[in-house]
Image (cartoon, rainbow over the protein chains, first blue to last red):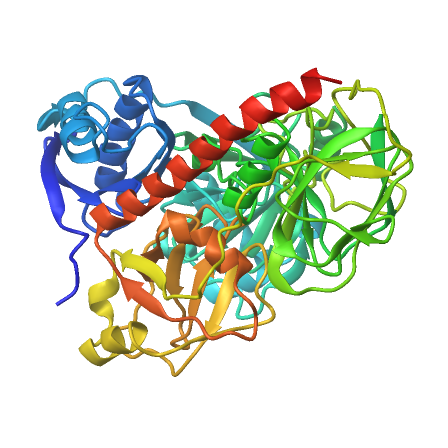
Length: 255
Length: 326
């Protein structure tokens, strides 16, 4: 009845280190964007496949891509309309770009060289820095110390950045402390605040309104606009938190 | 060698075609609302199409030129006046030091652009001049323009001023592209099929009101709530023109200052060639949608692109002899 635009163009099989094959569907999105889509889930296996493809695309040096944006189970590729204008076969989306994309990603790809930065982030869980820690502990039916132990004992992956420049969505948070976000967001959350929203954890890079459960604060700057890479965290990073005292926080914050 | 804001407008900022390549870090493009008009304004004064311009909403600013300049105004029609005398949009105008530009009343359109030959002398951040209001960076001091801001030009306009007039229009102008307010064209989005059949038909036949709260972030639409298999999605990238279906059944069309990702169902996309039409759409006028194919959307974009190229060719030729003979 209506022009169909979202037909799948191709399916790529990505073999992740655990041995599973992850199907990734290549689909039209807008008229100048293409999505690579895995099964809709927030899962480490899907994240590996997405990361693998994202890294391949970034090093593929295909001209005329404005942005390559990874998310939990998708990668969205924004195309430069000046370059992909359908005037010749080489500049055609379907005859030029799509075969090139498929070729670069291969139809059967094996994740062998996933580059992952491993990052440790100090967090002060002192009650002054953690307005929601006690309430979250009683929600979880445990002590604040147990919440801290659980939060620091997990290695998190940065699934994507969004919401604010430099805001990294990390997962998965242990189900025992995966409290839902506040019904009403706070008007202002200070930068560096570490929060939980169900199975995601994140750090507010700049002061902003926010609804996440605040359980601590890092003295590290997540947002450094004066740097050529302005964000401390990037998609695909592996992050571990470690606890520091209020004194250590103050020392690190001033250096 | 600058212009000065002598009265601030409601939302004036430095814009270009956007900051691309950083959306994986959550940094959105934040370009001009009407990139077509921005490019026209630049072409008319001989700039690169993506040079920085001043983007204005009504009430607009009052601007004084502190040096001679070649300028062009594009986009909305707000009864622009230099020294109290009406001037055309889409026409290169030489202004003399001291001339004052005002906009008297909003006749049509919602956003206007002012270009100056050579552009503004301001630093880029991550490859773009455009202002990121959210993190207060780039553009002019990371913020909207205020009274007494003095925005420097990059180039001096050298010419003999043979007249006593405070300003002189060039003897040519671009043909305005008048919007007939035909339906805004869309292509189906990833989650279009979540809408009930009746809601799909409603999207493509019923008028929607454009709410006055609409801003650079998005155009808020109001109609009877769209029914269907509503659920929130796992967050994924969104872009300018993405139509999101909100929990109350209403729609938002994401515009230039959209966040990089979102979790509402993405039922359709306004075609890239029509995003600027929506940016200029009158608040009181109902919006209707027409669904077209992806191929047609590309064709329409390319036609617009050719219009700009033709303007650029014609303009470059005339400008060279116009400025050269002085």
